[in-house]
Length: 239
Image (cartoon, rainbow, N blue to C red; front, side, top):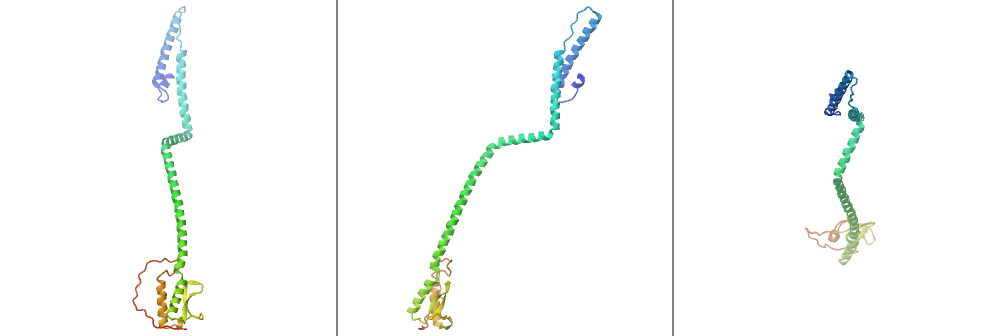
């Protein structure tokens, strides 16, 4: 039986080592057979049999170790799913340990970048709020510049100084950026103005209009004004 095992091709059995053990057993058994044969021929002869206890123990240990290796392999085959899971976990553990420094550097860099982005966004919010407040202030200031009422008052003063006393300019009700031409009693005077009165009052309003914007929310800027027709006073109407 030992000869058959020694001739078995298996990675769990060291054939050379087992063959040596088998050869030693065969030699000792052969010696014992010789001793027995002598005893049969010479009953009075004293013979000492070869003690195989240590050799059989060595063979038993050898076979036990081989069987243990085979059983471990069989268990691994039977538990292949768990073995794969364990192997995968070991691989990930190795990769994490190997890349820990790289991941730590990445997280540190990302934290710094996130802080910088948050700071930029906070500053951007502040600047937007400042811009909104500045635009609001600018609109309030423009109301004083682009309001019609100062222009109406100045034109009325000029009309009076040039002898136009039969009409005047007034703001158009709740619309503070519009005006109308009225008589002294408050009635509308547009349809009853002479050509000269229309021309003169139009010129005056145009002159003051170019000094500001046409709306309360508009921007004022430098202008180049070109007159392509002669403006002259054609007369005045007194009330």
